[in-house]
Image 1 (cartoon, rainbow, N blue to C red):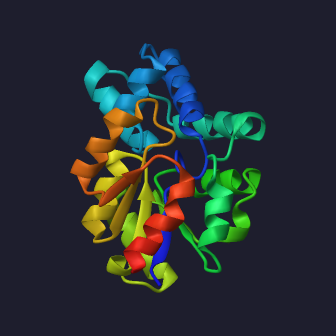
Image 2 (cartoon, rainbow, N blue to C red):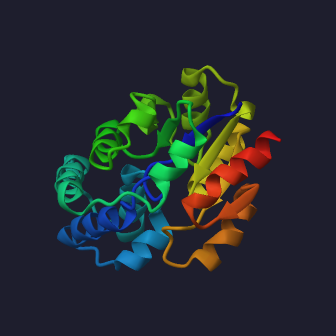
Length: 220
């Protein structure tokens, strides 16, 4: 039985719009005007620090040393009121059981842990959360998936990863995992699907209700 590793943002919880809302606020406060749509197109799946580094080079601006802390505080407040679980996730995890799952994310551990708590998904994952904070390099490098597999006691080749971003699919593919691309939370799923396939996803699906079948096909 393969081990399943899930990205969090955009896969388990529909948090990307909230994250991009905070991102563009912080950019605007530092003199950079960018729409949420552009921020999503350019930076979804990447770490906040990677985004700031690129913006700094592009616009020649410097961000406060505590910018990441400010983002986390604002986003965690939004989570408490606006965070929603991705449709069909709980039923899919129930159908895939009984087994344990892992999370591999480019978000901070505290944010992922909070998201799982609010979405009432902690029982499926426990403390099996690996983030960019636990490895040398975040996605699109493979480190976070290699480490998540190691912690779960599996080789990457024996893991199935569910990812929604090109950055995440690239990382999981580089790690040697079997990758399923999820488009259900993307604003333009038909455009995203071929990008995920090109990045290394073996197949793409749009609703979590399809996941148990895809996993069973991989097992068989």
